[in-house]
Length: 539
Image (cartoon, rainbow, N blue to C red; front, side, top):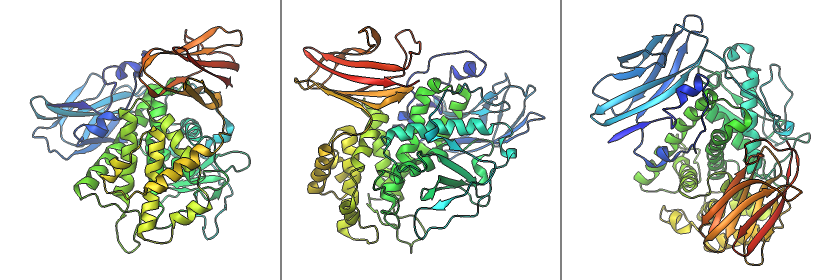
């Protein structure tokens, strides 16, 4: 039996769009990473804001024997093949359109999308100016920080592309994502004029997007498709992931040192991981940023389409015989490395879903290891040569980083996928990251009994992630206290197994009210063991 939907809140989302409220449970990608791959895809092709006429196109590779069933979200249903068309009488609100494919009794797929006539009702909160994303209506001067790289002829995006989705809403949502990404690289990025602001420019003839991580200010170009009937949210998060990870670490960033035919195993792996990790964080913390459910659904729909492609690429890697490749031969028409870097990204996402750690903290740890990059490691990365030693180093660098992220030795898992791994390099990289003093923003505490905790970012804005490691299974309590010793928030109180666990504090008390800016104390208690740290909250 195959009854699925491309939106995990199928039952409640129509109510949310009509103004009702409900608590979102944990939204995740598990279905698209592990279940039978979906073959049904649909997208909004045309929306006439005046007449209410809508065209939805799509494809289903399974070839259902009967036409699709359409629920247009306004009380009307129909049955037809793609494209589906409908005219809405009320063009002052948005709708959720559901397309269902029936293959056999009890065997169906469905996808949903927002039919947008009205702008999303965003309630913005204060975001750091240092990580703002801007889509300027005039050109901003760009200079290159990398010798040999030019700057394309850009145009600004005009107001016409923001007829329904206002420019400021797109900028705000992407700024939320940029702030999250900055946290996931531990703030360790090269700064331009004291910040890491990103600018988006128009390359009208280009059919996609591309990062310009070597410019000041940091920027990327996008074709007109980016602002079609549906904003290409997932692609934006991908390019921003390039910008963040190629500009880290601040004092010796990867950009320019791994580029060329050997760049993808790092740059594309990281952009893919950041793309999905950021979407996951935005979906599960959207309310804290004032993002409404219809906008979050747009982001999610874009993301699940992309991660389904990641799953397909991983399957292709396995089906083709697991041919590891980290060198993109310029003489071949295809990207030789695509299935290899997709496998790395897929495995990160798979472990994020199956472990209790999620995406945020493992990715922060992963970038912590990658930040040990220095001149010696750059030489061994050997960006300009295709040889077995360089293959092994590049592969080991990424496998070690993912292993450190999840605090699990994944060498055998990747070796089974034909990734070449050097045990000596693996141990060396772990020694490098564990021997570096933690000077980044955060708080740490270790009890003599072996209970350890850390908190990132700190100072925090809106949210901080607490990670704590238990030496043994037992009862544990994780609480936030104010300066007078009163319990502000209990993050967890119950039984936990030995190992690494995470909890998130959103700056609210146990009643759901936001607390004032100031100093708070974090305490983890397990039996006789206790670890304490200080958190600075900046609202």
